[in-house]
Amino acid sequence: MASTDTLQRRGLMFILSSPSGAGKTTISHMLLAADDEIRLSVSATTRPMRPGEEDGKDYHFVSDEEFDRMVEEDAFYEWAHVFDHRYGTPKAHIRAGLKEGQDFLFDIDWQGTQQLYQKDQQDVVRVFILPPSLEELHRRLKGRGTDSTEVIAGRMERARAEISHWDGYDYVVVNDNVDTCFAKVREILHAERMKRARQTGLIGFVRGLMQG
Ligand code: ADP
Ligand code: 5GP
Image 1 (tube, rainbow, N blue to C red):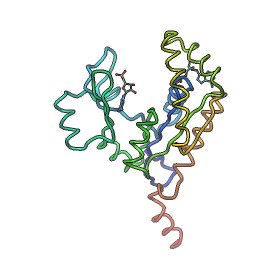
Image 2: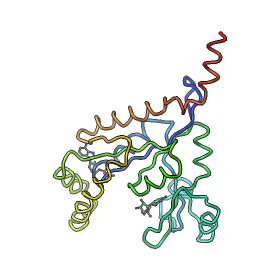
Image 3: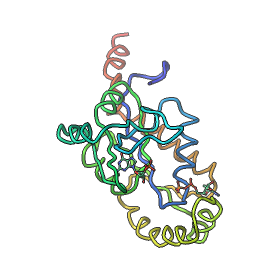
């Protein structure tokens, strides 16, 4: 929610994308830990809950019928089949949150970014994170230790295609030093919050200033 020392404002949809391994997850976690006014967008999915997951926190877990109904009612900003299940970004709670000044973080690829942008240009802020070099990207993917050599080779092959979408973003930040990159991403978020069009409390505030 907007903190007490700022004017009432509309929330924003903050999108972070990057080629796999460039640091999108790292920066997302830092942002969520550092800033109370931004929350991760929670998707709906038809896949079963995994141990340790929580309904409403990791995902909204819904049945196939419920998902069908939501698609029919145009309840998603976007949705997709991933593996054997369906995933989508539900509109209702995001719309309500934006109105109250809640910001939402989206950790999504360029296709998801395009879809969200088409649905709601005024609320979307698109940030793309680049690695300093492909050699460093490879080092990070190896260093992360989550993928096999084959998976890393696949990610490296896709990296060039992903990087080619850099011009579909409002901001591009090179993640060389992680703290510097995080500071830049925060500056973007802070500045975007102050955009005149988002400060819904301005008219009343300025009117008060004039009268006082
Ligand atoms: P993505 O979510 O884009 O796939 P991650 O955030 O998982 O990428 O980062 C990939 C790996 O690189 C992780 O091990 C992370 O700790 C590391 N990393 C992220 N940013 C930097 C950086 N600026 N310098 C060095 N290592 C980094
Ligand atoms: P998992 O089942 O491992 O949580 O997620 C599987 C995949 O679904 C991931 O690649 C993730 O990015 C994708 N995914 C999660 N939520 C959404 C969503 O709302 N929309 C789309 N298009 N993909 C999603």
